[in-house]
Structure formats: C-alpha cells, structure tokens
Amino acid sequence: MSTMGRHFAAAVFSFTLCILVAGCASSESRLRDSLVGKWTQSTDPALAKRGLTVEFLPSGEFQAQSVFKPDFPTTPITFGGNWRVEGQTVILTTSTVGQPGISVNEMRWHVKSAGKEKLEYVVEETNKAVTLFRVE
Image (tube, rainbow, N blue to C red; front, side, top):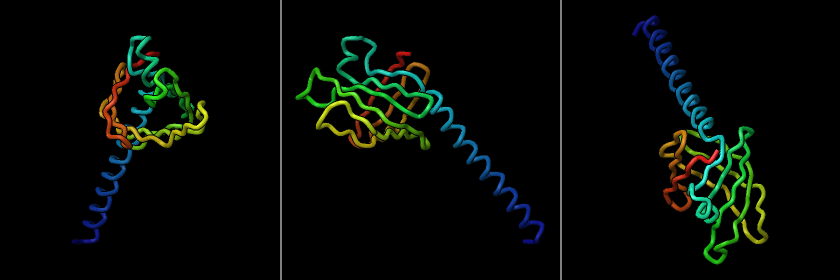
C-alpha cells in the first residue's frame, strides 16, 4: 500500500473510531437524561411502599427506599449515594443506609429499555428483571 493509501486508511479508521465513541457517549448521555426523576415499582401507593422507589438526581446522586428482606416486611430501608451510567449499565454506589445492621453494596442495573414512563432492567447481582414506572 502506498504512503497516501496508508494515510487515507488511517484517516478513515480515526474518523470511524470518533463516530463510534461519540455514539456511545451520546447514548450514555441520553440514558442518563432519561433516568433523572423519581421511579417506583408500582403506581399503586399501597404497593409502592413494599417495593423499590428511587429518585435519580441530576447531580449524580440518588435516594431510594425499599423493602429488601422478608423478615422486615413493612420496614422500608432508605439508602442513597451516587449513580453513573457506563454503556447501558447504571451503577449505584451506596454511601448511606438508614437502617442499622443493613448494608447495601454497589448495584449494577443492565438497562433493557428506558422510556419516558417505564424503565426495565436486570439486576446484575441477582439476575432479576425489574420494571419501574416514572412517578415524577
């Protein structure tokens, strides 16, 4: 291949790589923007108290409430921390838990779909599919 041909091939490769990186960045940005707000597992107020409710703040912080364990069926656990998006995965890093003796580790949610009103994801740690509905 001639020198000019190699330069052209390198330029095409560089351009393609830039497009792919920009596409990933904009995809992450769209997902991040679509998550900001409050979400719950049920739109029925009585049932929402027994499931997960999470609010993603634009600052990258989150606040959540959930009933995690069967031995605490009516005691919601509150927790919060920071969140970020990597590809199609939402990573929640917990820094505060409002229940003594309970710890909530980092969680990874693999997003299957994120719309204006509905968020579907799989929890990496349990392989459990979850659907949340936008509250606000």
